[in-house]
Image (cartoon, rainbow, N blue to C red; front, side, top):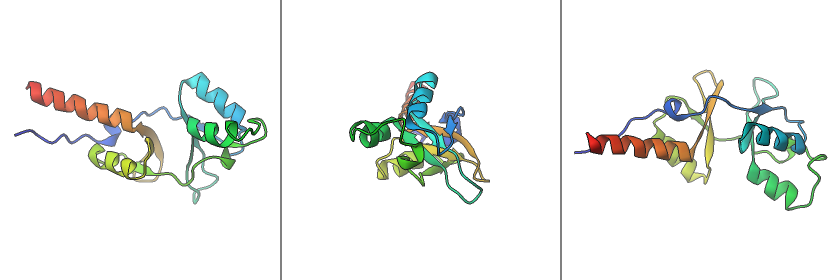
Length: 140
């Protein structure tokens, strides 16, 4: 009988998260994405009651480039997703994958018990971690 892997989101997430202010022009966001080799940026909360936002490359493609808007004249708050799905760092990746899949999302922001942002996790990272665990179980 195969064991079901229990892998926490915190074991798979990336802890280096790139964050920008909501008033950041899209061109600057694109420059930051290229410089850091990432395809998403977290939009900072304005205050403790606010929620995090997220901008991904596809937002820029659909909402700026495809509509022929100037990336210098559009700020990230105008095209970001907010609120976004957050995943608890102790959540089992099987449930995290299911939750993101239910909403057709490729990534989620990871928070701790105090709602502090602690990382970002992608569907790809979780699926590959699950498969890697499965392969180790089969080999044993």
